[in-house]
Image (cartoon, rainbow, N blue to C red; front, side, top):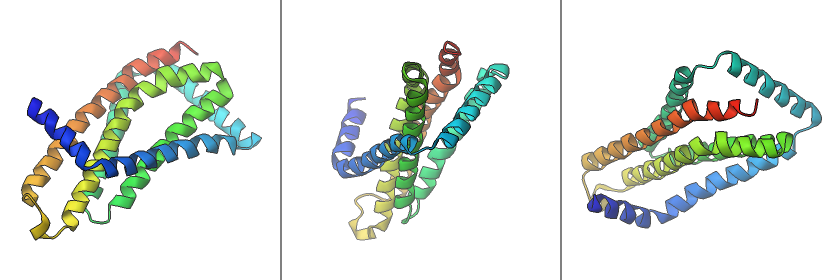
Amino acid sequence: MKKIKNRIIRYIYESWWIFLLVGLCFIIGLFFGFLGVNSLNAEQISLLESIFSDSLTHFEENLNLISTTRQTTIKSLSNLGKIFVFGLTVIGMPIILAMIFTRGFVLGFTIGFLIKEKLWQGFLISLLVIVPPNILSIISYIFGAVVAINFSLFLIKGQSQRKIKTSQYFLEYIFIMLGLSILLLSSALIEGYLSPLFLKLFF
């Protein structure tokens, strides 16, 4: 266990600039998501409020925790799978960064919209319903993006520059992604079972 911990620490230390790059993409996306809410006109806000209300009505009438968890799991694993596949290509880096930026934008826009339209209630919904599952999923996506970008960079290197065999590095790549999948499953369980229960407290 200590050996694995030390290896993770060394990996983070050696890849600090990639973590910084991916983290910045997420934060910039989050920032632009918040700004995007302020750029909406009255008609767009009214439309989003209508969609939000209809979604809540549908949610209350068709609440199925198992189905919600299944859908969330499929969506999350699909996103991680895309990151995994793009990591297998030498041109996947900008696409992976764009995915992380989009993830930040959507989260920032959602939280910003809720707070702007629902004030303190929106803040509590964000805090109890949206933030908890996203903490785990964001960690998974960011770490997954870093690992995928590292693998892309590994492929770009010539055979003489590679410290380990491609097959060994690929197996480690798969192993890490499987570990992140478990983390995403935990996020899906929170979003599928706990978040709906908290959401029912407000509506």
